[in-house]
Image (cartoon, rainbow, N blue to C red; front, side, top):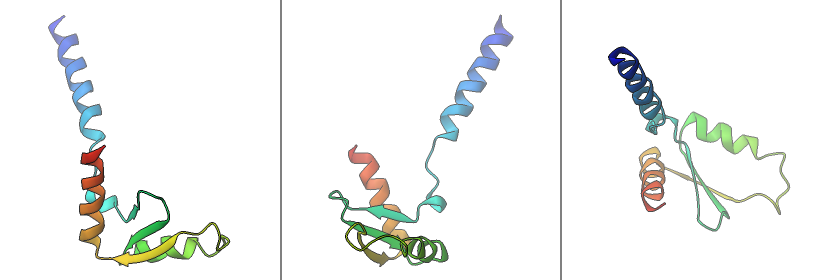
Length: 82
């Protein structure tokens, strides 16, 4: 019985830790009105920018490049507020 509880505890702990936000995967931040997209000044940010080329201008948000640290801070602050 103790082994089963130990295994279940380890399994639940693994699920909890796997859901944490890794700042190295954050490259964008969207404004609350969803009309402005902030992208990191990184290779990934520019790749995301290029992916918007095929979208019509009336559906495309305003895209602004910011420092990667700024994007991470804004995203983490947004998650705290929610």
